[in-house]
Length: 181
Length: 221
Image (cartoon, rainbow over the protein chains, first blue to last red):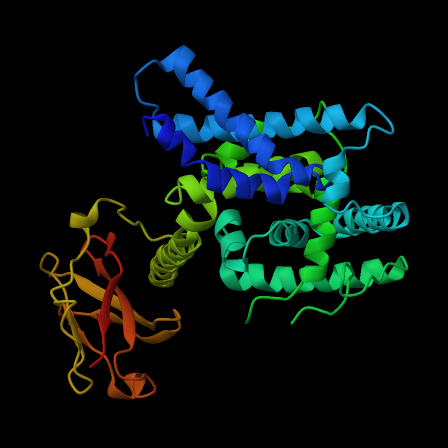
């Protein structure tokens, strides 16, 4: 990867990663964030690398660091001023205060329930809820598929019971819903 | 077993990761997640990071970005893919280790069976004890299952113990004057085709010293 065009090719994966991971309230700014990340990479290339090609691994790592920095910076900017609501947020459907409060309560409940799981189940379920397949979670943790699958199923069941015991049983649009199959 | 359905719980987790918390002083540096997803850290260290991310939204965000980007940019390094074979490989190692232990245990069992208290045993290298004269790649005939080994000096006698694969003694003999032993057919009768046998022989020298062999293996036709 040695040209700005090649940097531009990072846009798709970086945008997808930002959209999935960035705070909900900033999700509408994902395109801007990615643009900033790519500009930073181009600038780094101009200042530090000249015409030398980026080693791909350097570029990927730099992209990752830039994304995380940018997400943290923007989040920090947003959290300081009260009432500085961005038009983009409204345009991208910011939830009502009640809905938001409910979501936070459920999120906190989920975290509490996760903490209550035994470590192997917690690890398997955390990776699964963060978007990995059972096979990927198994490979990541160095466990067998069978073991990981069992831990995920049992862990999800534990979570549902725990959430229900806290009176948190949200429906299909955001709730604890059905048991593991 | 199919992939579990947990879209609802994933949505809650998404919201939690998206909205809760800033990175704290105790959080690992963001780069740690990149290394983790590239498979550059141990399973134990990875598990510790996952434990942290379960409770830390900021780190869960960093983890997700790193996982997504490593998966996209360096799929051959992605921990969730390239280590797929590791667990299987590790299982093979465990089985191999178990097999080695079983063989060692077999040797110890047979040896202790052969050694009587007070007897002097010469514990030397492989060449000191009798050696098998059987070709281990050739199965033993059930009708003519004869074990043969190198002879000791004139006046030597021999003791032999045969076990099955589970180390259960099947046959034994002491005071043999020739370096061979025919396993009784009735001892072999319960064993299935292709069953593996372990056997060990001991040469008792004329002066009373004992020379145990290594443990040998044979299969039944």
